[in-house]
Length: 85
Ligand code: FES
Image 1 (cartoon, protein in one colour):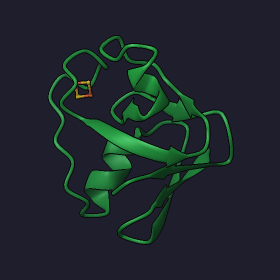
Image 2: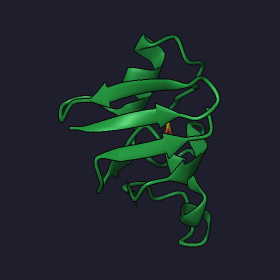
Image 3: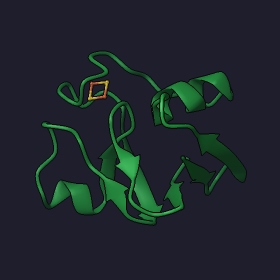
Image 4: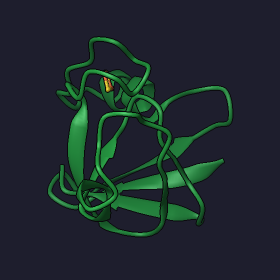
C-alpha cells in the first residue's frame, strides 16, 4: 500500500494493493477519465510531482514518464506519490 498525495486538492488517499490509483481517485470524487485501464490508451495520464512512480504503462516514453504517469496501472516504489491534481 502507498499514499497518494494530491497537490491541488490537498487530499491524501491510501491505495491498497488490490486497487488502482484511478479507482481511488474516482471513489474520492476526483475527476479522472479512464478507458483501457491497461496502460495503453493514455486517457488517464496525469502529471506527477514527487515520489517514485512504478510505471506499468506501455504508452509513455521514458522521457514522458519523468513527468507523467498512467494512473490506471502505475503504482509507487515509495510510501507516497504526489500528483498534480
Ligand atoms: Fe488507458 Fe490508463 S486508461 S492508459
